[in-house]
Amino acid sequence: MPESESPIVGAVLAWYAEAARVLPWREPTAPPWAVLVSEIMLQQTPVSRVLPAYADWLIRWPTPAALAAATPGDAVRAWGRLGYPRRALRLREAAGAIVAQHGGEVPSDVAALRALPGVGEYTAAAVAAFAFRQRQAVLDTNVRRVLARVLTGAAGASAAVTVAERTVALEILPAEHERAATFSAALMELGAVICRARAPECAGCPLATRCSWRLAGYPAAAGPARRTQGYEGTDRQARGVVLAVLRAQAGPVRRSQLRTAWADDVQLARAIDGLVADGLLDPLPRARFQLPT
Ligand code: SF4
Image (tube, rainbow, N blue to C red):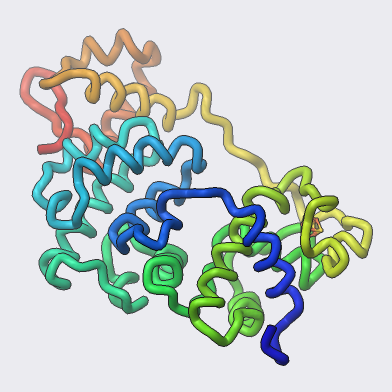
């Protein structure tokens, strides 16, 4: 361990060396394109659901150029039930930008990554760290929760990333880039499998003796509890049902067919309007719809 390095780093890395899940996008042979695909899919979907979709996606579109040549409808259809399907459109647009602006190779520069459609600050840092082994502060929800608990004694992180949080996250990163990239992955893994939002497994945590939140007796979060959004009966579910009907058909679908899948007419109309506005559905004459071409 380098002399100036926080002892947190060594503890988390030692735990990760033993406990890391084997995931295809973490393989040293995974190309940057595969890492980018995984990061977009993982943004709002759990690992277990991403795994099969990720494998199918990369078989079908092993390079950005391959996806850029597909239709938006192909991408939405292949997105399946991962949820938040606008990500499929943005990923295809990103593939087009990679072909047009970067010769078909995923860029390694954070600013260039950040400029790709659908790539925010977190995803750009994650791809730079995991695909290109750079020293980047990778601040996803899991990492932010672990750092907040261990370093500040709070139950969780604030709603949005603060400057102070970013500064601390950068300070704690090892100086050497490869070690920093592995530490970022390890911290994320710790938050995903041990230091979960609810019921953290402190008994198996490598930071148990250093965690300010635990040592303070787990004080409750300040402010009102965050409400978790349900899914049943929401507009989001209605949109998912409409897209599922479209995906199951080779061609256009009539509005009357959609009505048999979602009974609430007002909500169905809202779902259809929203999908059309988002570019996920093409309206056709005679009240028919198809996936975007
Ligand atoms: S001791 Fe518990 S709360 Fe603290 S980092 Fe570990 S799992 Fe999270």
